[in-house]
Image (cartoon, rainbow, N blue to C red; front, side, top):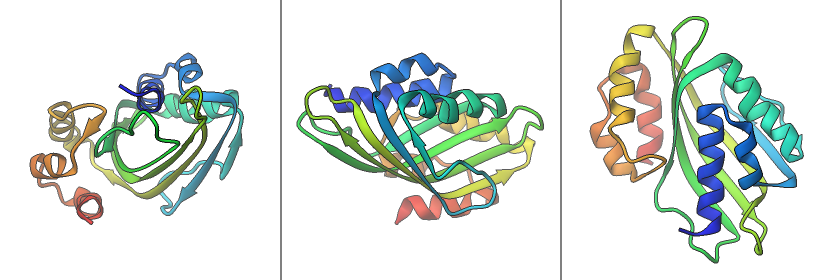
Length: 176
């Protein structure tokens, strides 16, 4: 596995499992994060500087609100020589306070330091973040837990998706 793919995986494991220390294996110390949010159901600061700031926003604060987090990168991991990587992503999670299900999707754009493979820059675009009732949590978690994690082929993900109306915009986005 390439260093760039490992950097992406460490980010996903850090965010999903609330382990900010793993970001040392994902981002350079002075990395930057840009957030482009196209929905009103979740918010993030538009720009964050430094690995410590990224850890605070994407792991610590995120982990205060959400649990049962599963994030997937759609498609194949980047090659060993890649200095950039773009892919769609999907996340499923529940809100700690209410039990509501959230299903979101968008795109990652990664820029890597060639020598280390650590991310120097990450732009996350959030296209959809659907809010679903708590009773939809179990079928969605069963679906997410049945998929290859964290890299999944889009066709496999879409084919296995439960038929839940609140997820329709997400599935439609992933099909494009």
